[in-house]
Image (cartoon, rainbow, N blue to C red; front, side, top):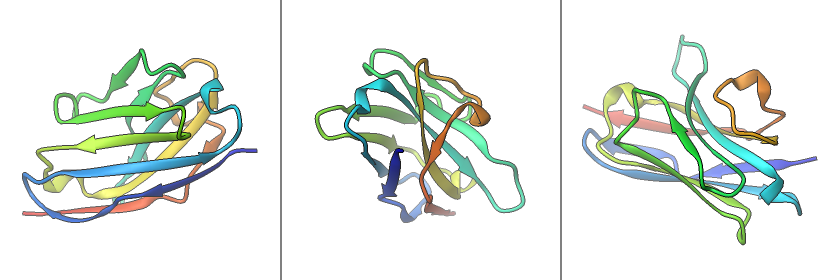
Length: 123
């Protein structure tokens, strides 16, 4: 069983930055690909970014490419999402997810999810 706890959300003005963290309670963290998804009010959950177990491979949604950076620290069992140049349309609840094996961009392929952290970007 993997427990994921996100933190770092909040209210920020457009153009600002936030750094989300997701701490995993599992001994074999390096066995898991990690990802960030988000869900805005009235919208479906959407993929944001994913990172391989080693951190050597990443993939981003087109909407965040060049503004967001996913990274991980396997020694700390933590994955991060650095969000720069934030826009009002980035407002959503952001979820961390984990799966064994290869990193994927499809939500149903992830087995473990955090409770989410709210990010609100004001215009």
